Length: 179
Picture 1 (cartoon, rainbow, N blue to C red):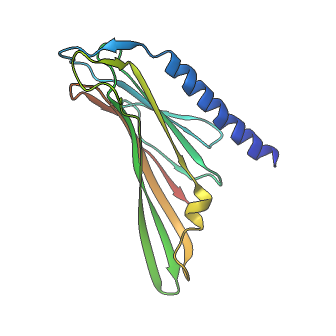
Picture 2 (tube, helix red, strand yellow):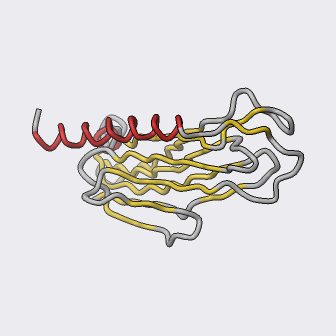
């Protein structure tokens, strides 16, 4: 195993340990009858030399995809109303060619962590919810139909946190292209 791969694997393991620690910091609250605030949602993107952190007030970020996986970790926190769900959603468009023929494939991604026990006012809910998503660049490069060669891809992702009264907060988008 190369040193670089170990480092990336260690970073991802550390992320999951951090996510578990943050989950332990979540308070159980009683969902109120009304909640005029929205959850605070953030999305962190790993796989680059720096960590990209996005919120609803961020400017969208676009990068060239790294030659390895991209890991996205999203969190939503709502201390006065509870978090009903945290969602990472996005799409990758893959382009493949065979001579003069082209093939475009649209691949949808979704990762969510809904509260399984709370449905509304009076129920007990968590104030913090997390979810993650892994984008495997190698699988996307090698996934063209038989007889076609990979020629490029692009993708875009965002995270949305929702509370129990319809309040939602969506991060700015992260997009990538390759090559």
